[in-house]
Image (cartoon, rainbow, N blue to C red; front, side):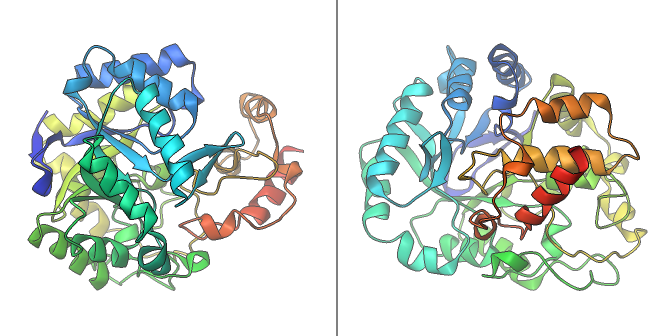
Length: 382
């Protein structure tokens, strides 16, 4: 495993990291074993944006006995209210959630205290400053967070954060598809565009500038969504019309200025191994540019779910991300496998319970039309 200095934090992070958002999908002992396996293979950075008790307990158990060997991204503002994820700037709720994070992770600090999920400029200008930011600074003064970070999908916000003077690192969504998309404050249209550049090689200038500003200011970056929710592995679902490999996607991220670690999501040890294959891959295996150069140009209409979970909370407690994932898996096949139907039936709440309130859609960073997808899923699965 190769390690990189995470910007001005000075922390040495593994090039391949651990995005922990799917840990709660499995039996607790299986997920704990997965965290420990990743550590044995040299991974030393893990993101815990998830507020649910199960995910946090799993990471705490996985790090037990070796906490000092892990670098933890813990988020301030990701809370668990009424049994669901809720993003908030309310200090009282943030305090409850952060103390819970420390307790369940069995630690008295997190290495990277993340200002959680800032995509709108008005949130950066009015939601973050004031009592919320004062609380983040208080946590740093107390040593409960060692460095201040910020998570965003919007390059405009990332640039502002890099120039702020107090944000030391950024968690940003990076992959070759997203980098072609212009930024927008209209989350219903996020990443929507008519067509890619003809040669599929032009990074959106706002994003290119953001990478340069981060590098110039010593603000390191960790990457989320390097595989676009797995879409880049499937030529039918990828906007490029070809399949990329985990190694190619990871190499794309690590060749961007300021990027120091790629946080991949894992369900199995085999997926950990597939990501870690990057460390022994040759240049031909890493070469994403040649693959993209021959790819057909496709329209990217937006609205593609990456299963990030930011759509929650749902008033009907529907696990929107999982429903969308099962819908996508079913839509790829002429007939829905019985195992997939059984997995859907096993969900506590189903798509037909959706009341189309629309509350989830403004929270989606990728403009997914959730209510429409819930209707289609209900029709598909019955």
